[in-house]
Image (cartoon, rainbow over all chains, first blue to last red):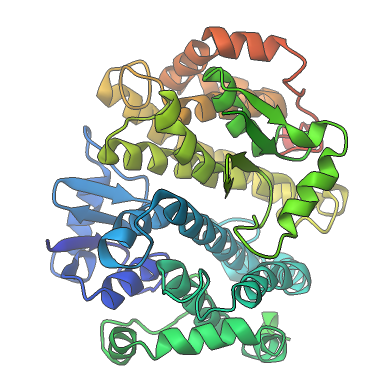
Length: 235
Length: 235
């Protein structure tokens, strides 16, 4: 089946977690909004009356299904593409890990927009500085420490042990994003999470991921996405 | 099966979305942390080495499974207790709606803690005022307008039509919470969402929900939870 992914063109954003899974799986998909009339098609599907109109991108058209919410899309794709266990217990655990990643991603966005998205970052610098301080003092150690502990206790290569899941691909993206947005802070912090960094390197070396990262399908990080490099926040 | 729910005692919080589902289903469950040595048991399970230690409450012990993340718990419970469709497509749609509710709940918490949870509300009043302004101007209309539109277009009693799902119970909780936290603002806004209010009333009248709300198992809203009544934010 040829999937249709709908997400804002020009940023990695939440869509990237889906793109990484589709690419690792070697799935056949179109990144619709990046093509001709793609944005119009995306907005049209969100404004649909009946059926299952998504609240926001990303969403995936899979045959007759239109599936929204990043973690929900990955739940659908996971066991179909060897990126999650087939049994229910394993599916729930991987989904739980993904939802924890999603919570962290939201907090990343809050570092530069604590007062909300209607204001520009430039109009909330002081608040952003405060939020970022707490983020690095409390939240990054709490979240990445949790993943580090899981890796230590299961003695495996990936979050669930020996087999990769979509949650590992998402954790790879977290490391990539933090290194881009907070190069100084992340460089100092990384030595505390050798397991997570090892997982990152392992994912980056996967053939399909490696090829994707080198391709023009991989949008570069920029200051419109979730991970943004604002020097004032990286002291 | 007797479920064990683990959540902070003393607040409704994220645990309440699970409590409402368990209660509506008439499920046999223990709200462990509210009992003797309950907090110790909860912390112990989070510090567990092997297995599937949750990142945070709420989590549900269901036989041998320990399931974390609110929406993930509801995903597990839904089809088992007639609170979600059995077929995959319907499960994904209801889960998607729940994840959208969860995103909104996070934004509610951000209205009083935009700079993060390490600071008290009293130390971030100005930022909270700004965040709350945007919340009511942009975010509440966007989210509740979306649910209102779904209800209009499916002509049914509930978000997916004629049958209740756990997402309806959660939307009920949103209305309850907003009325508690922002009585003035919500009173003015409610007339724009008659469908959502009708759904709220319908859920409140369900026998098990009605009994639960009148019982001492239902913790009262207070200023420690997600929905907090801070008068300065309700002008």
